[in-house]
Length: 311
Length: 310
Image 1 (cartoon, rainbow over the protein chains, first blue to last red):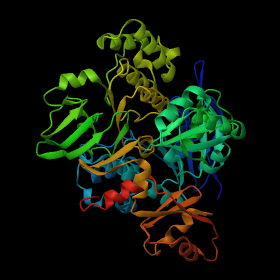
Image 2: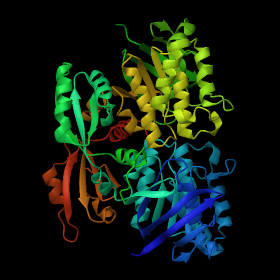
Image 3: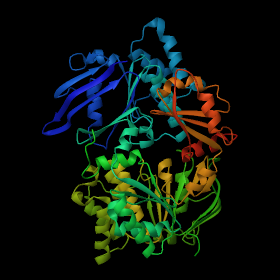
Image 4: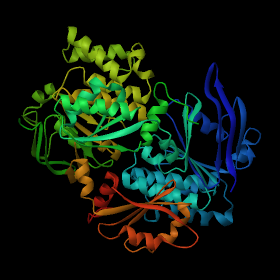
């Protein structure tokens, strides 16, 4: 297995504004690679360059062994692209939509029918074949969009916020499908706002202000967090929360049901202070234990003010 | 103290279809109550009835002690409501929007000043007070919308999917604004399709096809799950997938990077037995541990357990 997507020192300027500022990464064949960042961080600009629809200002870029800057059309044949805004024709049926995209991709006559059937099955929409796309629930539309994007059997698949607004069961089925495709050697490049989805990825790159600010497997990124996250169980969670927020705001307290989360940069020094606070205010602590940081913690630390570079 | 919200057999039909199908529960004062379910489950319809803008087909609901059908105006005085399509004035600046909503809610003088200062602090919108609302990012718009809904201190705050499409940093900041209300004993009723957000609520009601599937503290809910979930760490988890098909009782396999999550019916699998079943030449298991099922696991098992569920 080799590298199938590679960016080296990729830069894109719009006038004086640098949207992508020296981004480098490499994605292996068969990998699910997650690209995360707030709105305006440079995610979409990067994807557009990878897909050959926007030329970089400088830097190098290969997709499926093709230099995208020199041969953008060649690169396009090697990729499938799907986003929440993927255009399905709502007044066409499921099958007519598939037929339409088969035409766009100019599938050869001999293999066209077979591929169309295959994508219908992959979308799990055999029973909806003659329903109008506009009448399908959100999760079905999204699977149809994915099926259409994969008609030309591309080895590399770009998914741009693919599950925004889709219910939990459909999301789970969708990720199951993605994992199966990666298992068959397809490379998946995905952007998402949802950290529980990012957990499905083999590796992640976090981008902010046009620069990669952290990269690694989800486990590595969580382990790299400094300090310790404490989960405090108390009978007076709201009072405890208000107290910590007032006295120790730097611990970023958060409430999770009856549990309080606080992050301590220096456990030895601060745990005592915390317990003393609770004691003085007659707050009974049932238990206090260190738990692992979530990807959301990682994201907020890296993207927040004074975010650290953890590459 | 009487409950903040009481629903008794609340029903809403749209041309014969029951969008909300007999909801009965109460929300206590000072709670963060989450109504959690997929799109089309009946969340927004429920909220619209509770805030007095949509009449129920049958059943009753009381909010802040007032009846939603007979006393909607009394309710509106006592609540804050942020809908999914909250209307900000796009051509007005952040400051002008805040001032406008302060005028509407008759908040003035020192109270207005103090309130705005606090909201700008937690929303981190301070540097953008002069920017037109239409030029804000999605997350900033949501934060401004919430700030406008909170310019007066309501007894009860209704939030309809406040963080859909919002990045994690802005989501956290939104919750910071919400937390600020807890100290003032404000009751918060929030709807969301996101399970990680449900974790932030003191109690959660799962809603599906207009009916409540379960209602409890998130911690309690997880203990009621009919599933046993094991986290299995292996090299190349995707290559394991197919060989797992024959495992007795296996309900579901999920792949998370370098880990597999295997779900079994409760009591249907022991850690030691699983270890033996997975011991095979050619692919070493690095570790196996039982994990607490997530709220999403629970939701999915509840929906799949339903006769009509998909």
